[in-house]
Image (cartoon, rainbow, N blue to C red; front, side, top):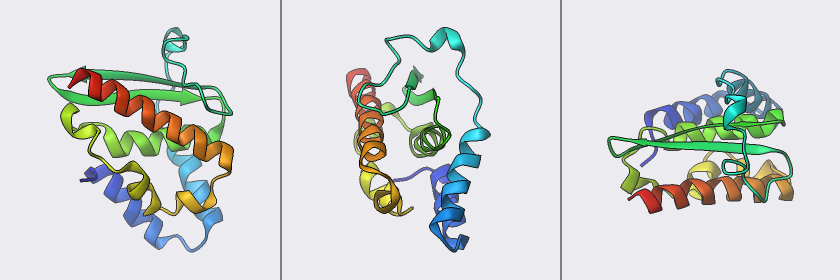
Length: 136
C-alpha cells in the first residue's frame, strides 16, 4: 500500500550498509523538503508528544491527502519527509489503512530511534490518521 515515493526510500535503504548511512539519508531527505511557512507554525498545527518542535499542516484536495511539516530537529524533519513520502497523494480514505509501523519497520527505523523519537513519530502518525479519518 506504500506510495512510489516511499518505495524509492525503501530501495535506497537496501543499498545503505549501516545505520549511520541511513541516519544521514533521513537527515538529507529532510533538508530537501521545503520549510513550512512560519505563518503555519501555530498551536493548531503543532504536534504534542514530540521531544522537539513539530508542526504538520494537512491539506485535502479532491479527496487526496497531503501535508507539509517542519521541525527544529534535523532528524525529525527527515522523519516528517519520510512520512510525507508514505502518505502524500493517497486518497483520504486510504490513509488510515496504512500500517505505518510496519512500513517504517521496513526501513529499520523502529530499531534505531530513541524512545522519545519513537513516541514523537507515533504522535505524528496519530495526527495524520486523525485528520484523514475526520475528512473521510
